[in-house]
Length: 314
Image (cartoon, rainbow, N blue to C red; front, side):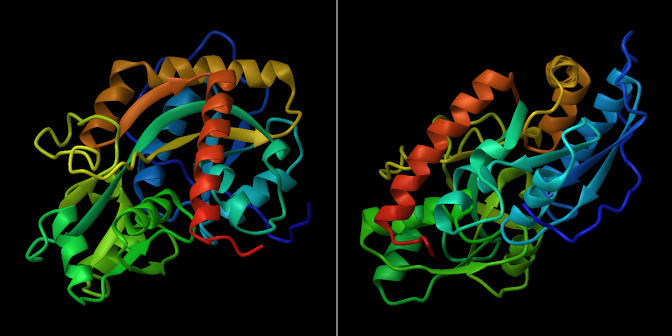
């Protein structure tokens, strides 16, 4: 894999404190590439997680935002790095479970070590607060009635885009997809009236003047107790994103184990859980093996949707 991009250190920002572990990480500073745009749900919670991870392991985990190409630019940077535990990545799983089925990229699924899942990313469809559309049914009927429904997302073949494609396929409707450079930009497109609806991670919508009209989790969630899932509304679509910590393939096993253990301590702790919940995020630890299994299953499911809807550009 080749890349000419350089990693530029940045300051970690978070107010969450966690006790230092007895065994410190062997590197005094670790660059962590976050392929999401600043201000996105993954970025905000990811930075809080990295601050606590640093306290847990006695080192500094420095977040570096490298958005673009539906997060694949930042993922490529991690894949190009030395497998010495000093460069990691923290991302939503789209680059692993969707983008690889779309086009030829500078990385493959097996180019990485998947250390742990940190949180899940509920996928929602949101519109402006004063939009006449109040449900998925409204959007579907509007499209069938001739309205051009322009829908933003963080990029082509991201999880929200896949959910939109499934909705179009199941209802025989057409939506116009508008890929933006990250979740935060996709949200701004909704707020600015550039699009009718946005496919977003739930965390990106927190404290924003939007109305959520579609939820694609398997079950209702505590953050939106009165919001029916897409399945309850009659659409057989379940799409929940996954975000976690990863590294170049062949990272030393000692470092991998230390990171996995510290990840569990942070994610299952009350401080991180409370902070995540305040951002409408869903902390959910999975170890290396279990997260890998989930990614493989999600990848297979998304490949089917991408192939059936002709989303690939290979």
